[in-house]
Length: 352
Image (cartoon, rainbow, N blue to C red; front, side, top):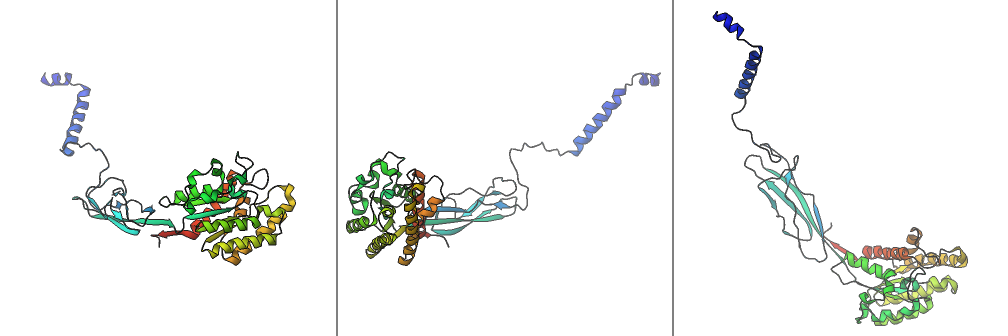
C-alpha cells in the first residue's frame, strides 16, 4: 500500500524540477563566490601595454622668445583609456625654446609593466626682415575699376606724402574707402595676418593715367622724402598708347636703378594682360613690353612678380574695359607680390 501510494503521488514535472535544481546547484558551485562588479569604462589587463602619446606639435611665435605649450596626456594605445601615474618630461604647460624639443612620457602603474612613448614640440619663429613697402604705379596700383564706385584715379595724387613711411600723421588705416579694392591694401592685410607681431606698412603711391616717363620723375621725388625698404613697381600699361617698348624699358630701368642706389630692394612686376580684342594694337605692344620686362628683371638682378601669368590663369580677373583688373584680379596681384615677399624676406627660425 505504501508503494502504491508513492506511485499515485508522483508527477512528471517533479523530475523536471529536480533537474533544474541540480543544474542551478551545480552552477552555483562552479562560479566564483565573489559578487559581480559593475564595469564603468575600459580597463587594462595586467602586464605589458602600449602607451600612445599625442601627435607632434608645431607652434609659430612672432617673436624670438620661448613659448608655453600644453598637450593632452598619453592614453593606452588599443583602448584609448586614460592611464594613471603618467609623467611627461618636459611637462604639459612648460615653456619650449625655438626649435625642436623631444618629450618623453612614462607610465609606472602598480599592476602593469612600465610603458613609455615620445613626441616632439617644435617652436618656429617667423618674421619679415623688412616691413615698409612702397607700391608705385598707375591706376592699377590705385585700384581703379569700372565695376566699382570709386574716385577718379588722379584724385589720389599726394597720398604717399602722408604715409607711415615718412613718419606722417596718416597711417594705412586712414585711407579713402575706395582704396580697399587696391592690391596694396589687400597685400597689407595678407602680410599683417601672417606676421601679426610686426608693424607692416604697404603704402599706395599709385597715380591714375601715368606713363613711365612721368612716373620716373615722380618716384625720384617720393624716394627723396620717404624711406621704404622695398619698392613694388607695377607701371607701363599706359605706355602702350604713346611710347615704344624701348622707351618704357628705359624708364623702368631708371626707376629700378634709382631705388637700388638708395639701398631699396625692388620687386618688378610685368603688366596685366589687355584682354579686350578691340585693343589689338595695345595688346601687341603690351606683349612686347612684358617680354622685355622679364629680361630687364634678370639683367638688374631683381625678382619678377609675374602678374601677367597669374591673371591669365585666373578666370574673371580682368574687367569689362579690358585694361583694369576686377576685385578678384586685384587680389591675384596682391597674392603674387605676397608670395615674392615671403620667399625673399621671410626669416624662419626653428626649422632645420
